Image (tube, rainbow, N blue to C red; front, side, top):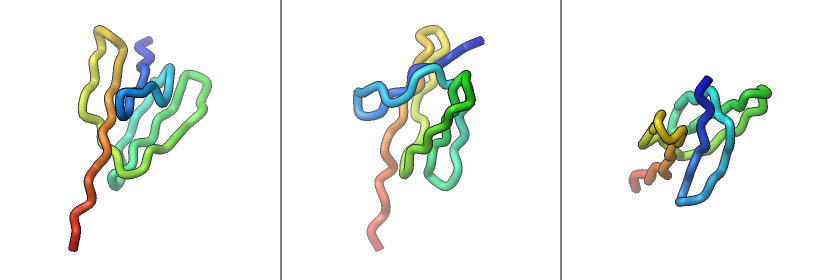
Length: 64
């Protein structure tokens, strides 16, 4: 099984992620134990299976 270390703003924010879903600019992650965490206004910009790394970036909101 491939478990990812998740990075946001050059910091590790979640470990052992086995599930990721993007919903309305939110990234929902779950680890091997079923613990979950949600990151608002983010998107997945890189998934590196060889290095078991997933990189998130903040989504810039458009000004009206």
